[in-house]
Image (cartoon, rainbow, N blue to C red):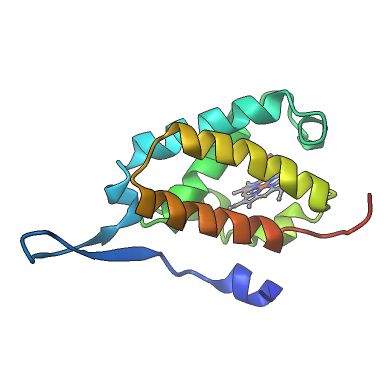
Length: 150
Ligand code: HEM
């Protein structure tokens, strides 16, 4: 995935399902997973993991991880079709650029994904939504790599 593709993408992912009745059910993942409450729980749990992580915790400029948790929550809500509060408060995501100050090697990526997997698994989503969100996070974490050095 090229850097430009990742950063410039403003696409919102959706799923299309057919209901047992034959009716088409179509909606943004944001609503299908339970809206804001889901994203608050996901990012709160994720940052509980980060708080005790020896690789990740020292990267955070602020001692209080609360504001960082809210930034990630707002970003993910926007990405999955919820309110665009992230963009209003922080501007264009440009996530690769914003991560450049931090050393993101395969080990840091693995640590990030380990806590995110625990947080996502704890939400016990229906398999289809779980797989779609996990697939995205895994690819996004790869896009954030900026060094292969230890
Ligand atoms: C791969 C390993 C990753 C590491 C080590 C990492 C680390 C960090 C750090 C240290 C910050 C600064 C904290 C702050 O907001 O003050 C940050 C910010 C952020 N990260 Fe990550 N991150 C990773 C992957 C990701 C991924 C995959 C996403 C999105 C799916 C993401 C989304 C964000 C967002 C939205 C911010 C706030 C940006 C802003 O508005 O300033 N990060 N990350």
